[in-house]
Image 1 (cartoon, rainbow, N blue to C red):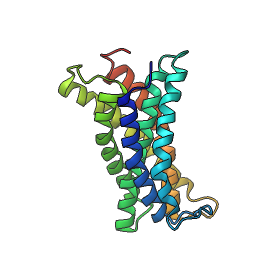
Image 2 (cartoon, rainbow, N blue to C red):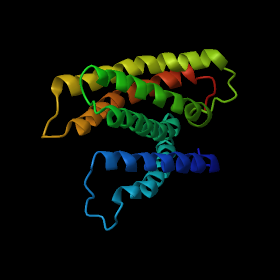
Image 3 (tube, rainbow, N blue to C red):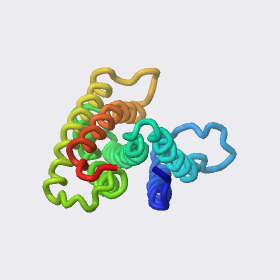
Image 4 (cartoon, rainbow, N blue to C red):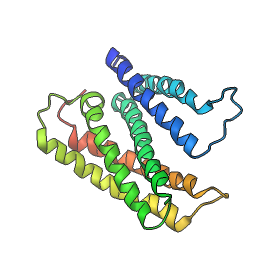
Length: 208
């Protein structure tokens, strides 16, 4: 398959708002500037992430010459990472607003953020990644989407909560940073589960 105008537009659009969210998250976490010669070094992600997304989709198509599932997985990875960034943005808004980054409320925050991310990802997965816009799945397809996401969400919440509430911060990391480490760990496993579920169960009607 070839990289299309739709791929370019989708990659740049998701990359742009993902870059804005990353910029704000890093500011909230007081991340280092890495010596970049600018007063707002994290704002460079507004440029970096769209470029990475375009390269990622093209890499998927390149690998798809030998293994066809990569034609979808390259785009799915882009939406998966964008979804994680949206999810992280919601999580950090909740942490910033409540000053809670662990304990009983942390799994609740993870669940809220995951639902928000799932709602964000539905349209992108349906109309771009798996291109099943004309599948006619309707409410049944949407229900299957949320069942798969629900199971992935339970996995996400379980792993993230274990990392944060059982393992606890390592290497003198702050509670806010460690809360994001837990989110990364949970999302990594959920991403793989979601791709398999979406491809085989939810958006399977239209083959590449």
